[in-house]
Length: 132
Ligand code: HEM
Image (cartoon, rainbow, N blue to C red; front, side, top):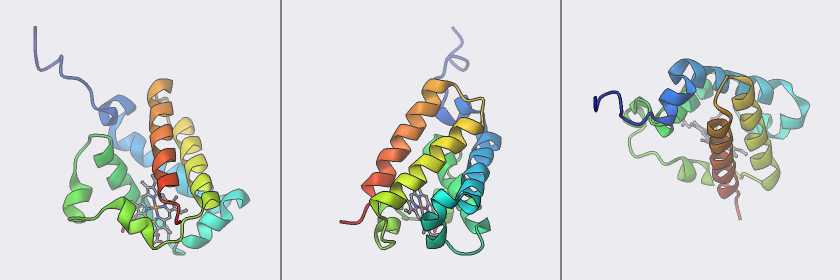
């Protein structure tokens, strides 16, 4: 048996690598920027979404098991702590998770089980950011 080829795929590899991550992130911020139902979430962000497109793509890449450059660029940064002071509400967390699930669904093809697992975990994370 060739151990090299039998190595389990990371979610990053299974979904199509950096190209697909960038498609997801660009679709996500286009939705947030353009669709009125996400306007509350949009207003929480800076006018220029360019730096966010770069940062979220880097974070998702590392999170999904791809290259860890984001963590080298942001040493010691924790996403949960970084969002603590932002005043995330149930509504804006739902907007974030819904726009992300749509972006994942529209940026594939990604195997449906993997797409659903990603959306479900990001949904849980977004709601864990809700300020008490
Ligand atoms: C799984 C959930 C989430 C992930 C993975 C995530 C990811 C990120 C990343 C990577 C950054 C950039 C940090 C940096 O480069 O310094 C960021 C910033 C930010 N996030 Fe999130 N986020 C999530 C949920 C949310 C939610 C639920 C909200 C609001 C309701 C939110 C609002 C913001 C805002 C306002 C910023 C700062 C943007 C700016 O400076 O313009 N995020 N997030």
